[in-house]
Image 1 (tube, rainbow, N blue to C red):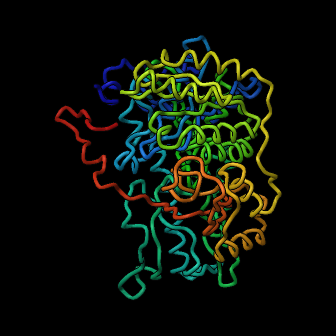
Image 2: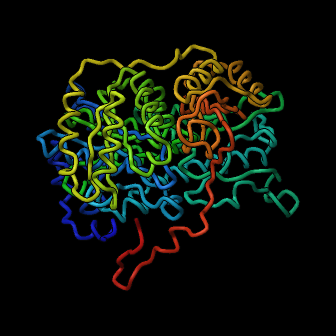
Length: 538
């Protein structure tokens, strides 16, 4: 069996000018990063501002297993299938993070004959967007510590700093650190600090929800870096650094254009975590795709309880998007673990947003027709249309039946319906999601969570959407409870306002913003030979 990287290396790549031409962009319209990658300047959007939007399709999934169920492979494969039936299509996905690439899950560029090229570049340094986010974030960190060291105004209490540092790698040893050690204050004020992974940075969330460079700069300025002695918030703009942060992101804000194995245009742009942030590609890339194609296929991280809910309630609300349909990815291994009830709840949840849904039963090597037909029959017995797809081995041809059905769904006249009123109290918004999406009976709030939510509302941020940080492995906040449980409570442990991004992060259970490496990291299998060919990347 060929690996993803072997398949990618054997495929003929088209020059990026050819890919741009397929969506009516000329060589002068793109900024090339070699022969196969380019950035599309934001100015292109102005030319197509009067063009009607295409149809937006969301790919989500049932509750996943630790290895994932192939949402990105399905997103790419479905886009290729739509092209095969004559539809002008763009796929829009997130950029891979180096942490997971060298950790457990591997890359995030699809797989088999439904992946994006050039696979090695996209999964590694790509066009440098994640590095730009890292530097912009850490510039703010450095300015914060210098501000305290220089005793500058406004006052910033050293024990009330909310802004950690970031790096794009899994490193559990950096979750909690002490900085400013030794040399009697020459190295700065000694205080507790720590690192998060770049994908969990608020700067990444801001990049992905900004509408243009001015909006980006404004949002960066609204970041709450900490509090003074009276617990008054201190913002990034109070330190005068948000302009410089925007400068570091001036190229990163432009969407990245690449191609699928079958020559489809693909935007790969932005990469926020799906449990800490909203887990979707950039709003800019999505909106640009809707102007350049008749269909845009995008994805949201983890299962529909996290990814789809945040896509609808946060991204669609902020970006004024109206998705036409959703595809729910189901696999045999996830079905065996969680059962048909899990699938039904996820599908029912999507329908609560007035978005039609269809099941894509993603075939893995070794799955038999009998096993997959059992899942298909179970879905249809519960009133959910389902199609068996084989995007990994067959590319777009493995999903044309699904594509045909999806096109019919997309022409239904539907308008998105949000789950909660944005002006409702914060606790009410959390409880609505817990009951309506997770199936919980209610909430259990710690004292710290109650106090923080009250403080957030008193500061005037209570009318923001909520972004619940929860395990992706279960509808509950306990990753060891599979299936479709009910009657449980969701424990809210803390809350934090991401004022720049424009949402309130609600922490449940034990959620970490810096992952650790597994016992045998993927990095141990990755190598390079004397010809410069990479092996082991998947």
